[in-house]
Image 1: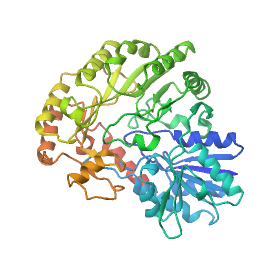
Image 2: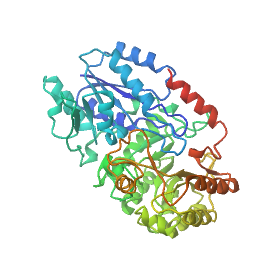
Image 3: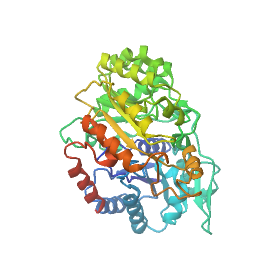
Image 4: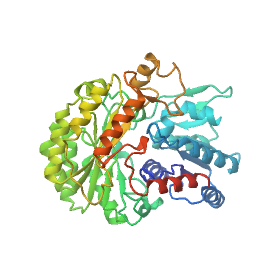
Length: 471
């Protein structure tokens, strides 16, 4: 069958992200004998024209639409990505042949599958890992059978508009999947820094799915499950080699929710990179941890130059409230090691979580001011620290339950339109004032939700992104 996969993400301000999930699904469907095309709208200057031309020329038997992010998770200034995505989906359904099935999926969709299906009055979607279930949908359609009867990975609305969801399909052996079909996307268009058109490009890779952590606000466990499924270091090394040799991708980011969950897994991936003599620079989402300090020189040797470090807070009380299984000492020692090894960090902080007070905010930020940072010249932009004000409330999380109990949101609140939690022990105006105070002393601390210390060109790029939403 002819399958068109559409990535509706059009985010070009905060980060430009290659459609890895769509590339995974494409490669698996191709291995099963289907013909696949990816329409990536990230760099589209006229989405409607591109959609129309692609559908007319490719004549798909099925259209899959991926929703990656719902919003920017920044408060109080928030970008609601779902709205332009909704417009794109509605347009696709409008111009596609009436008999062409349209299936929704992606990480953002998996979190809000019920809300989105009802909002769009759409009857079929995929939750969780998409490769096997998407292929099964094609098999059922090819036999004129109802794909809503697939026993896992499916969600749908019945004829009365009632929502149903079967358990997600979790692929246990990720090594069975072929490597993503990067030949179907424009790899050279993805910039590390979207504000620097002459800067370096990058590619993404995933080494595992699932997260065992219990952070109260995080949706990863719902998207990928709590059981961690690791790819073999050999398969990761093979994919990296292909990225370098076939596509010229020299800057790589590991997009696992947390790269350093398992010591030996990280070590063996680093050894694979070194043994294959791969000339790459790499970054990763990283949890500060004393356990990994002695492994960091090997990480550096294998090409590590950038860590997106989720410190979240340097208040011991707040770390416990967020159910972080570490101390502020882990963060401080990790940062010192990064300075020693000349590995840059982009530090993520969350201000205003459960039981936060102005005192715990100041304790955390005072300690953060003592943390030094190495500033590289490839990955790092204009900032060392990202301050997120409040916590985006996601369904299926402990934070949702807590927010309902504290009256921050009513029970059963539809969370598709972003709602944020800020500790009732803090007055927002006072919190904003404290953040402005610290950011004024630290110009490389950015608070995107408050528009503080945004990099040069940020406003112009934001205007361009909003203009693209109209096309």
